[in-house]
Length: 253
Image 1: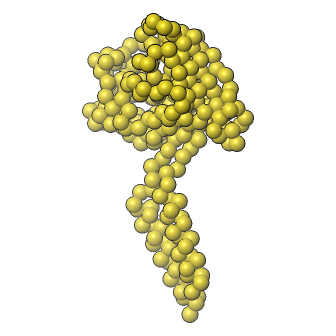
Image 2: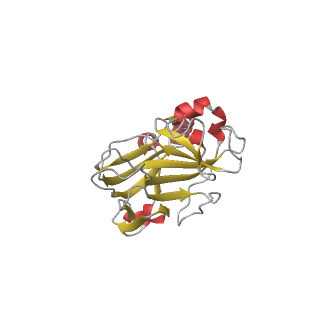
């Protein structure tokens, strides 16, 4: 009987582990750096043991109309890839939650760092662009982040669309914004669009505000957090557990 209880305990532990979301670490020091007018400085990160020493990165802008970004890309991205590529197979419809531990400071309170999603729209679901153009979704909301905090990208994040090949906003322009879930509901064909880049960025402000233009974003870690297991997976585990218990009982007779 001892073996039965041991097996049961093992199965419970497995289920407990499955109940927690699985995270894929994105290393800031291995992302491709881009933009214009910015500087990048390595700093201690939260995942130095996995990503290497000084795995965090500080992005600094002396003028917030400039642009600095860290890019985790797939091989299909026009910008290329860094030392760490984005896992393949991610679509806009299956996008996991993305979190990043950051520290942000700016001269004015109306600025925020933001996420960017890069993809292609080969069937021209959005219209008014070439099917080979790179389209980016720019997060367009003030998160009020000041100092240390967490950036989160999920279905509630607010975006607009920009043709990164021609340099034009799509649909109704910059102010035509909605949550990711709303866009996917409005343009269901986008759900299957392959994500070729997840970026964290700062800058591109409309102009220098009184009091200064500097901006600084330190990214100490980032993660792709996958969903919890589907009910079918849990049922399968219970089925396997039942089989193991039965087998143990047979041997015990």
